[in-house]
Image (tube, rainbow, N blue to C red; front, top):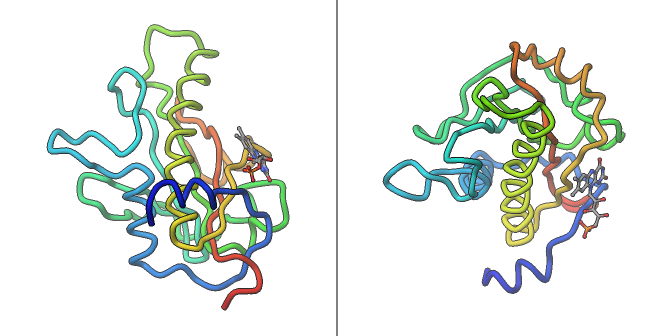
Length: 178
Ligand SMILES: Cc1cc2nc3c(=O)[nH]c(=O)nc-3n(C[C@H](O)[C@H](O)[C@H](O)COP(=O)(O)O)c2cc1C
């Protein structure tokens, strides 16, 4: 789809079908979001100071996975269905995918905690917009979300010291589609 058409269709959705997203579509979604698009390993989204801060986690019914762009694979992190903990809105528990943007705060040295939050959030937002445009072009529904119980999600993900969640983003098919 031409970019201008995808921009015309971009919007947030809060009603999802339980229809699964195929592996190929998930693969394309992750590449569009934050995949490697150049020989040097750089990404489809810009990032702060050329330091790789954001990991994209994917919470699905079969567990939590981490996107590894270099190999373009999803690596298993947890076997649990934690979708219900990814946000405060009801639809998150049943939508097939919740992306979670997780920052490596420990890689952001010599800046304040407020700046760590700022730059990690901006990095996440660029990925989020890539995901919005991919979804618009594929007939998928999505919403970027900050309404999260952060301590609960941090605990559910068993994040190590220094890592923190910035935002989450639900993806699925619009309710009423099968
Ligand atoms: C930083 C940020 C946080 C957001 N958090 C939520 C959220 O927690 N839940 C939600 O339903 N929408 C959330 N949104 C989506 C906005 O509500 C939505 O983008 C806005 O209402 C405009 O609607 P549109 O995206 O359809 O143009 C968030 C958007 C941004 C940029």
